[in-house]
Length: 67
Length: 67
DNA sequence: ACACTATGTAAAGTTTTCTTTACTTTTTTA
DNA sequence: TAAAAAAGTAAAGAAAACTTTACATAGTGT
Image (cartoon, rainbow over the protein chains, first blue to last red):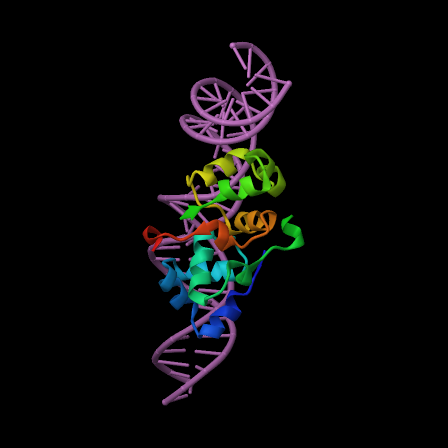
């Protein structure tokens, strides 16, 4: 699964720490998610989409290897 | 977090088992998710949205208690 | 060069998701 | 109304998410 958290953060000029604080997780969780180290919960994804004023699908994308 | 998996399944006339098979999880995972027993991964949510031809936000909704 | 901020990473431990097996209850259909 | 299909539930274990602490690296400004 791909993600463009880095780009969305840049659009809002937010650091990983700021995003983490805003959605109530640790900075490491944001970093690891951004790096594709693991797949976040749907609740996290929804909160991220809310912060970035977009859809979950605009942040996370299924890849062929996921199917 | 709320969800309307049951309604979306009904629209497509799918059983829990059929949905489970389609997205590659066990039937119990679908049942538990539908019942709100736990929050699925973003990948599962994306796959569900794909099956139901809608957005993740159309299936899962943040509640006040999540914030 | 130095301090400062942001990012990356790692290890240990906790919590949650998800699986498998199995059984019960409800709903559908013949 | 009996059989069959679907849904609900539970328990034990595996796998993955997430936390905390801690430190290393990269970039930015003074």
